[in-house]
Length: 465
Image 1 (tube, rainbow, N blue to C red):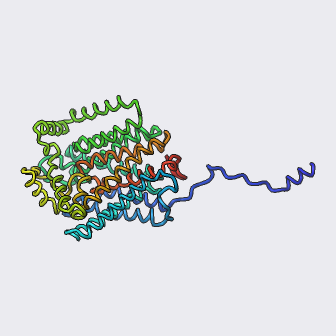
Image 2: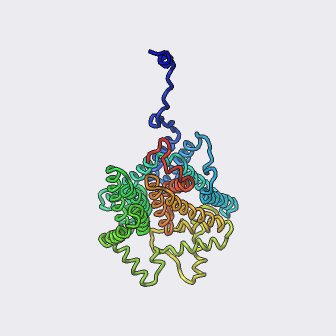
Image 3: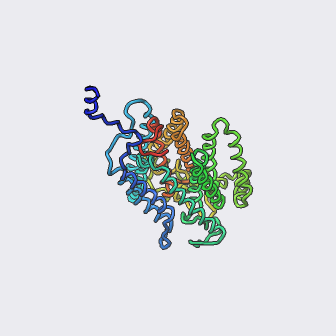
């Protein structure tokens, strides 16, 4: 052996750099804890009932929602280093930054409105709940939802499925866990959610999520689960025959069909319309509900068409006229409703009453309109601008993202938020914890997608598509 070879044999060889596959991402214990707390929160909000309380459903659900949101925020944001949520440099973060600024302005307006409210104590109590719910936005924009969105989606769908099965048992009168004195059978199919309208809306969201897994997911098992979940959700929608929630589901499904088929989506969209019409016509309670709405339109009775919501909307408008800059304070709509509805009736020279004995108006039944009466016009306009910019950011992200998991996720988030936006026109999903939790988390995730699209085009370390 030559001297060169002997010298080379004695010299230590440099170690090969570790491969990318061998590098394991650091364990994110706090993120996993936050996701676990949120999943438990979904089950608690969807299943907890206090039959001995005056408000057996809403009160305990609101309490557990606050506790689990606070615990998740502490786990997700309290044990990790702070980093700026905005991308450094570049103009891409313009719309997300403006949206975040509008939201902060609206929260400041709500706080000032509560402090100066004529019903100060009531408004301050509501403000605390609003502030805790607002924590869901940074949680949704954090790594918690980015890395564990599948786990949280499965928890939400499972809760919706359990309630759908119980609702079916109630409708068939096989099991009535909460006997109610009602004028009909529809009010007794709310399962552990309590109200059939609330249940129908979370079933609409669950149905859109399952349809996203069916149309955009990868793997036969995931698609089969999506198909089964969509069938259960649509069945629950039929049982509870809520046209608002059904419309929200159709809107989300239409966007998913566009995502799946692109320019060839005309035929699937036509089939969706035929399918929706067939469901309404085939199921007698839904058919009667739709026929009632058509009859009211022909009679020009628009208050009947919108299920006697005109009085609720008119009261919110009157509240905004009384105090346009700061409103009456968060949470005051229910206390101010009768007074301002009567003023609206005097101005309109007609009665705006609801003849249904099982209905009340603690909310304006329009999440876009109620803030104008509660926090004033400037804060409400800021909220609407933030919502518009959020959707604009998602559409812009879709133009930049190549086909793949990130684009599919963006379409799924857009479809779910669109379903929520349609439901908010004639309902109040952001004021009920069972629907506010998933929608606010999705809004935070949408903000992250819009603000950081190049980073999410390739999944982060430890993140599964």
